[in-house]
Length: 164
Image: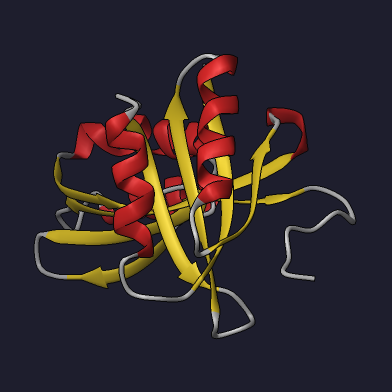
């Protein structure tokens, strides 16, 4: 089962290395990893999506909490999480296809961020499942390149994962 782990950490050099080393030592493969500063420049949020059983995730949470720079760790249940991922896709697009591609982009919530004589670069931010659907729809045009960020996630409702 995939698990989304949100880790609030002190924004210091070497923190990410210690976190990834912990996963590596446990033999736990990371599917997605995203790191960014929070509203407080002294803290960062690390979002990790990984596959594993409940016992392994519990052990990882305990080990992550022991790391010096860790402030808070929370595994987000699928029903309490709002995941998003950004994807940039460069596709073949001759002038005759551009209208069709624009329609697909409008329906799926994607933006055209670059256009050349024979290509278009598209941007979409949504759930990983929605991104896969979008990719399937534009695949027939010929994908030249895809770049994806890791998943970021926030908890639904009023609960937060903050320093205070």
